[in-house]
Amino acid sequence: MSVRLEHVGLWVANLDRVAAFYAKYFGAQVGELYRNEHKRFESRFLTFGGGARLEVMTRHDVTQPQPIEQLGLAHVALCIGDEAAVDALAARLRTDGFAPESGPRRTGDGYYECVVRDPEGNRVEITAEK
Image (cartoon, rainbow, N blue to C red):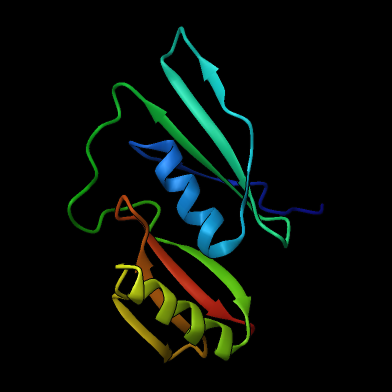
């Protein structure tokens, strides 16, 4: 059996703001808006250069982020190239008001990474090729 991760879904309050963040900093192509009026659900697929996809979704009754760590999705990791690319993007994000939570640094498991939060507080690991 051949398995690949098709996409990760992420609940957000503002689809356009989150989609613009991933387009600006990670080159994501923003897909068409899908709307289900009956469920009051909307989503867009964000497609990255390597083929990875992130579905950002909103629904009227999903309104509160979790304030602390919880079981379930902890972060999305996006590999952007080499260590210099991670350093450059971390500096750009910092300048634009998205101060990294950690890094850039080498982790104990061998990754070179920087951790930032997207506009809605979702943790994003920006990594170099390992």
